[in-house]
Image (cartoon, rainbow over all chains, first blue to last red; front, top):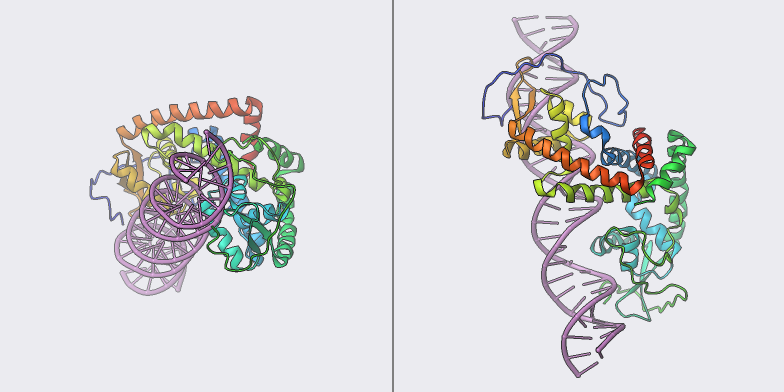
Length: 172
Length: 172
DNA sequence: GCATATTGTTGACCTTGACAACAATCGTCA
DNA sequence: TGACGATTGTTGTCAAGGTCAACAATATGC
């Protein structure tokens, strides 16, 4: 309907390129006709990293959706569980997220009684973060599901390629 | 200041873990004291993909910031430039973004006179996308800058690892 | 004791992604 | 032919995240 092209009525007919029925909106990017050239994109790591990120996160979210744990929440729960008494600034720094963002993440986890913010006796500014018992048991289930997700990933890629990617991406 | 912990005053003193001065908020994740355990996160590809994505996109954005071209805009310009007469649905599908999102991306690129939406003579619903001459010249500069970014990436990773990553991530 | 830095917090703004709805158009098939 | 379903571009809305600035409480260093 072209409601916004108030500009010109130039007819441009391009010969070789027509109406290929794309159905790779989902995750099937290895679809039918190639036809459309990625050109320079094909040499950019960033482009493929982004696509991989979307795929991996999508699978992770679907896998943990029964316990309502997002990737960000999972990372908070795991690191908090493994490092008792961590401060929010430390946690934010190791996860690579902003302090401000972590505050709101913790709000929701605290509302669900999964984490506690205890006052630090040594430093009045800090909170000592801990998992509640509910938090620990949910984390256990989350880890089990996440392991299934990771196994599926390893199967998709092949074990050696999976391990290789893990090692290479650690460079960042 | 713990304004929100209206809950308890339990003092919890954890011995081994204290106030390490983190300075890896930026991109230095290979920082000083390890101290904080990633635990299960250390085996998850998704975690490292996300960190890599942030790093790579950050470098890309900084590199192209002089010409004000975001990663998404770059991908639109590249694919549009390489496939004249593409429809928006086709473009969205190959880039893996929503039609709705592409509409707003194109709005801004059209406002900057970089792309044109021409009516398709064969199908009244479709737009045939084309770069303007300004779009083509900006794309040329963008490609040059993006190549510098990619070169920096290859140097950081080593050529063989860079190539390997490119190949492995294509699986998604 | 005072200046400066850090910590947790809130508020505002912007970008993305995900959906739903809609008008215009096309294709198909009775 | 005409009616029905599908596709295309579009808009709106909502939630999730990232960024940035401000602020009070607290700690540290001189």
